[in-house]
Image 1 (cartoon, one colour):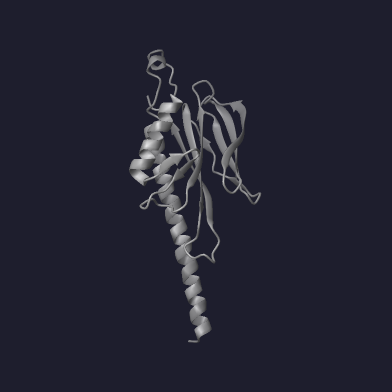
Image 2: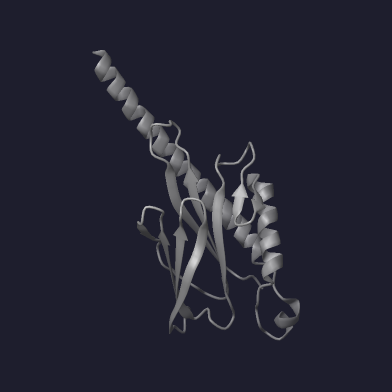
Length: 192
């Protein structure tokens, strides 16, 4: 076997390892968001609950989310980013956007349009649509810094929902490879 063939197979192996690491990170970030968001959705307004209205106390929800991100993943929040520690799944920060769909409007369709410009991740606009008795359809679209539109799989809401979308923009395993960049979403019904 020639040196060039050996280098070729080594390069393919590096690509496979890099792609596998990216998929593992996506899975772990998704699980971390789900656990943190589940904990956040227990921050309901106790006064309104006695009247049969399930509504989220957003500041308390974000505090609960932050606490779980730190406990489970070693991330601490600064602004709209979670900074990793030495034992976090990513080496670069996670940018995130959160949105709450309340007791009154969860049966309406919602389209969330988000934008990542290379450093900031923001909610551009929310479009509310038709009302569905069983719960509205949630569609999330992320515009990347390269102008690519990423449409995430639609979800049906079953009650007031807390939505967190994180954008992973991670350096690759080997510097000559492209960066790993992908959105991860968690939609959790407010717990009562």
